[in-house]
Image (cartoon, rainbow, N blue to C red; front, side):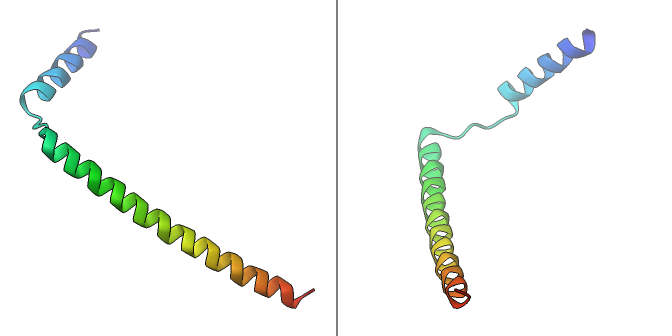
Amino acid sequence: MNKISAYFKDSYQELVEKVTWPTWIQLQQSTLIVLIATSIITLIVAIMDSGSNWVLKLIYGLFK
């Protein structure tokens, strides 16, 4: 039980003293970057999905 309480005390100590938390502006900028990157990746995946769908329809159409 001593090890568990020591673990939580050390974890709390590290979060309070050693971790540097981002400022509100940095957090907003990081969030915006993540949203833009997610949108771009989603668009790329959607284009690849549509392209592969078109190619497969073309191939399946040949064997009808």
